[in-house]
Length: 375
Image 1 (cartoon, rainbow, N blue to C red):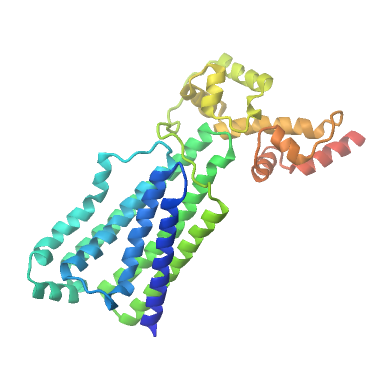
Image 2: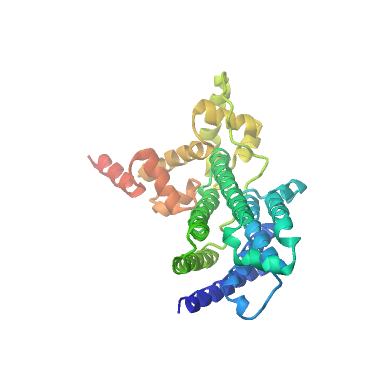
């Protein structure tokens, strides 16, 4: 009964993963490389999951079976890393140096060569039947998981770096959509990986078939939740992927001396020219308008004024919104109209920024201002 459940869950999971991979490679998008990498990643997972039912229909040689098992296991982490980096940065390109990500795969195959690939069929059968008692198996599995967690934490670093770049270079909160998606993705992925790791550790230590099967069911159910979540993202947020320039870097250096006249010029320009009314304003655009290199402008805003570019621009937008909401001499506008007029294009981001700067919502602010004028 348990094996039937595992086979059904495995078959259904494979179908969904392959279907979503097909969707990725056939949909029209400017992020073809990202979609291709993700489709490859999902294909590898699908092929790996076929192990739960394909032996009933197909019999491979021991060498092919070991290659299938090892290659698919060691491809996941590098492909996941490349995929996420490719959607974080819109000018990402595959380079020769990325071959190093697959080095653990080749090391594992070299480790297995003398004790498995370079022996006769009988010895190969004995090796596979006692796989979890083989020291080579423990070594290659350890290398695989070490690689995964190393690349996972490398991705966490990249995502934190990405958020800093967004805050320091973009004024539109929509640019953070990618950050939210990737954070959710990594949380789900690490949960599934920890379940898989628990299954592997248990098999190397106890190898109780009933407990192993229970862990397999949990792993497959986690995979189904994961793929269903991907479908929901594709339906509800099809434009969720938006990269930033890979040449941008977070501001790290401290500025010891900044000319007060340059700061005053920036502040005066913001008040008089009101460039913040442009919802798509970026650090590069503002730097061009001011005649200041974007790198220097970023240092001035982040280190001297003490704000991220995102908060710096929103501060002016909120002040303008307060002016429009409290001015009774002008035709009364709806809060949504005011939101668009001052450069926001999301009600949620407008309300969040307004409350952050005024400690009240736009509607509360308008009501309080009206009451004060009546007194």
